[in-house]
Image (cartoon, rainbow, N blue to C red; front, top):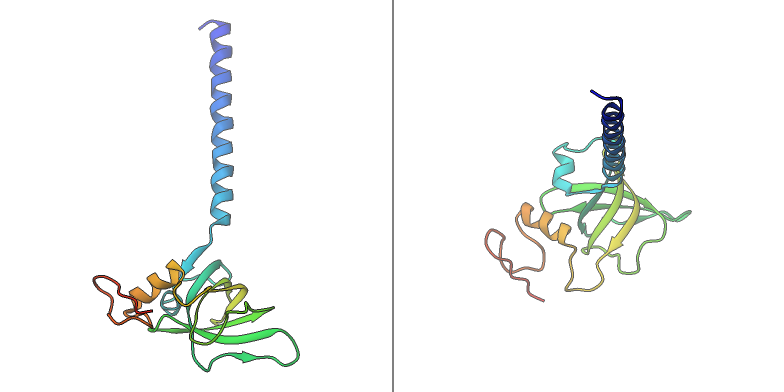
Amino acid sequence: MTPKRKQRLMLVALMLVGVSVAVVFLLKAFNSNIMLFKSPSDIVAGDIQEGSRFRIGGMVVEGSVKRNDTDLSVEFQLTDTANKVPVTFTGILPDLFSEGQGIVAMGSLNNSGTFVASEVLAKHDENYMPPEVADALKKAGKMPGTSVNYGGSTVVQP
């Protein structure tokens, strides 16, 4: 092998190593920024690691909202009609947040099984439900406000 050919082979090998390292860093960055969606049933089943960040969606359980008088903390329960998960949030809730409404919250699970939300998003009108929440309710069996149980097609009565 000539020295010039050896030099080219070394350059190609270094380029391949550089591209491989860049791909590994890129994949790690994407993986750390992915926020998965989970339903209350997933959490009750124990599919979640404590401290990992994810999104949870469902309906706010009627009568479960407890506001703290001294600060902006709120406790409530979230359900997919099959299971309930306690949620805590400190901050200003969206204007459309209310009991019986669909929400999506972002945060993590603490060691006592309570979801600690860092952000809460509420649906914007009576005809909209976030797709993740609708899918979670579909898996649980029935979405409130519908006249048909899931299994085939979805019929929503406005």
